[in-house]
Length: 457
Ligand code: GLU
Image (cartoon, rainbow, N blue to C red; front, side):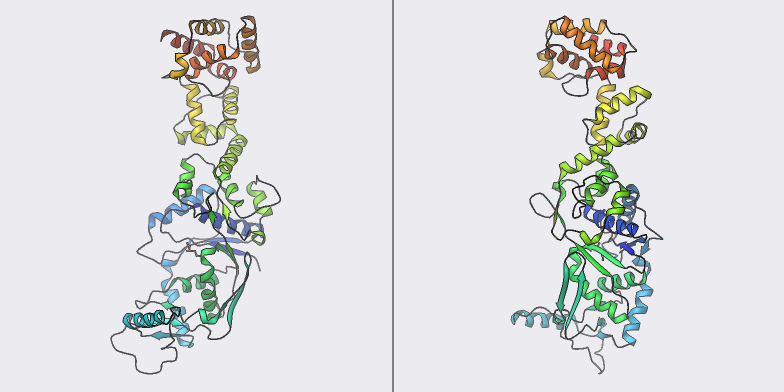
């Protein structure tokens, strides 16, 4: 049977990176097996779910180019179907109406608490044959096994076995008729033909209940893989403070989806000591069977390093078009574009800083680093003015490089005495790309104009 996986987010907010990692694992496994990857929006909680959140999730998928197979399934459109299955279980005697009132339930809980027993429904309506009490809108409860245990082989955590005593006859339909979470997840996974469920390990405790539903309805139980959380470097739950958590915020911060996905796949999974994975490599190497059973740790510098790798790999024409979103329109072409971009690729980890770097070179400085400026001497200014007077257009970067070295040795200048003032004139600050690259990209007349500006201050 071919593999069918799914990602099933609840649209209560944006898509966070933990969710994206779960989706990625499901996607990779389906693709690796030549199977299908489905998307189901779990929007039954009408109070907490929003259309914007659903759209944001779908947008994040588009950005990541992780395409799901078939139509998106919305649980909110499947209520009649869930009703049918509730009725079927009632008809088969596998579920029953429970007329316990809120007060009765509370009294039971109170008694259990007093006796130091775990809160558990006492099955009082399980075999009820009498006349239902009046004025109570019943819930529907499923008959969970009374004896033995519920067990499954988790692909990440190994065998998990829960005593039947720990699972009570849980509610599958509330008194207003709406179905509950564990019920609809099991129905949907079964009807959508899902063979493998890879999800966060916060769902591990839901799985036995879902297995009760599968078994009551005679559905085949899928394989489960419960993936440990992503923790921050202090070993705590990941929060806003540790970086972004909203996937689309990474886009705004100038990360490439290739880098983010590569980063996420390594949180909880590895293939030897390989760090860089193209999508094709991820697909061919990934298996949920070697997911790590301990939590993984978010590491911002690794994400930056990967992003820099993917920026370096990117073709410069594509990079140029991507910068437009970051307020940077570049008209340079050909070799000048190549020289500028290759130089900036060395130094920039995100598209935001890359765009800033481009602007710092292409726009004449509007202000100058005060510290550097205060150290600027008459002699320094004279040196750079002399130097730019010797320049002409049409040389290569290495020829400009050679020229500046020659100038320094002819005039017995230390690099700091010559390059610092030149840098101040051209970029307005220390740091940044090489001066020879700047001359090549900007052209001699622009360089002369910038030196003259500094002279006029
Ligand atoms: N809707 C659930 C969530 O967002 C996931 C359910 C599942 O994967 O089974 O946490």
